[in-house]
Image (cartoon, rainbow, N blue to C red; front, side):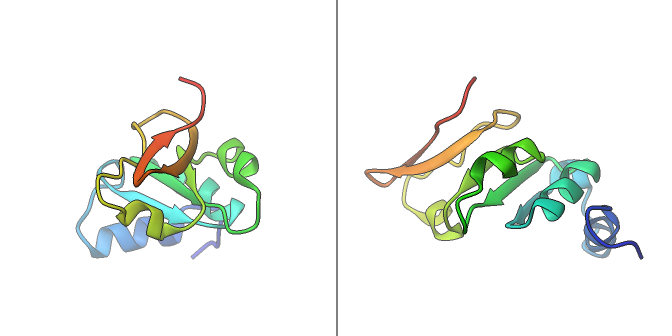
Length: 101
């Protein structure tokens, strides 16, 4: 099986879970992993920006970026709209996509 940025590992996991890639999400902090999610046709790719490279994650195919996965668990949080690139940020417990429409 080819490694990232080839989507093979993500596609194999989706098959094992009997999930369609286009109905699934990828959460990844590496540029190659974000590329793999996009190349695999996954419905939503979340880039986890642990080291200050949100713009690079977006450029490599992330729909949105978050500083930490815990941000997605905040009450009332909305991680962004499908297909809209941007940086998700916590704002009074809510998330908004900070990128262009």
